[in-house]
Length: 359
View: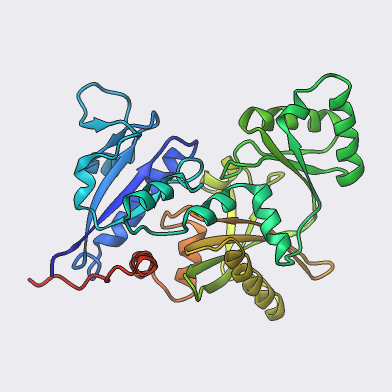
């Protein structure tokens, strides 16, 4: 039987463009290993930072460097799906953040009636929007930190309204608190505020990224994560813990080597591990997840409480990222993990899984 052609879509218009390239490189390596190489042909498709599609982007995948605009490249506008994609059997979107992890590219695949890896339109959109996500979690009773919704119009309002907004945040949440754009991934635009001056600056910064903002109360807690794999019967991985020296797990800390330490499995009581795994599956099902997600929690060791932080429907996927590392520690090596994800994507659409090619 002929090999299945996997459209590995990476790059994109978000601030996580470079991370996407690194994730795609790792996935391509995993699909080239023995066993996978017999079943799959990888077709690298790159989206430049300006939204232009580049077909057969092997050079980008090999170099790991983003492309600059050039007049002699075989490209097509983002708004038109290149005709060369017709031979692709399943898409593997490796796009982090807006325009890739928020349901937009998933909607394109749905319109194309093509199978794809990962969460669908609804789960992706809810998982990206922190306020919608929290509403979904509240509906199933998952414990969360106190938070408030703020609109850009409130931040950019007249001098009488903005101070009252800050008063309300201080009264409801206190300090420290965290200010986040509702629709950005990988800690982009997030700030920790420890006083009124920092709160005002954080709100102004977040409003420059998104019209909807979330402000959360700070907690003293350990930060732990759980990976989910599956469709209708999802499985939870072992638990990992992140430790770092900064104020919080920001973009620089997350993606700079040596800035954070991972403990896998995390040194936690067995009953706490069970609670985290059960709540991770509950969160995944609450947004109607499919394929994969990573769910992040706060563990308040002093009280034994577990509080959900957020769900990430397409987490970083380099060989050292938390998601594949958690599954490696759970008994699923990287090459088997990417194979299972493809099969789960096929399962959702009832597409037959590939068989090894006959030599």
